[in-house]
Image (tube, rainbow, N blue to C red; front, side, top):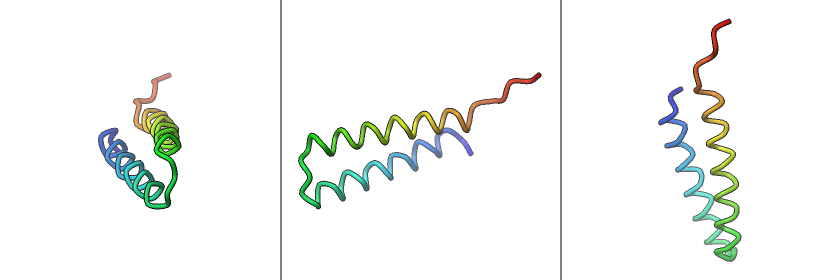
Length: 56
């Protein structure tokens, strides 16, 4: 998979999570913290899965 596809999917997940937490009445500070954590984990996962493997 390409990095761009991972980032697009991650944006959808973070957006849906933010919407759901806001609809559930969670404070904006906690929504922001949760989104930043998921965004950071998602970017690390995307980079590790899409980077080119080093040749031996």
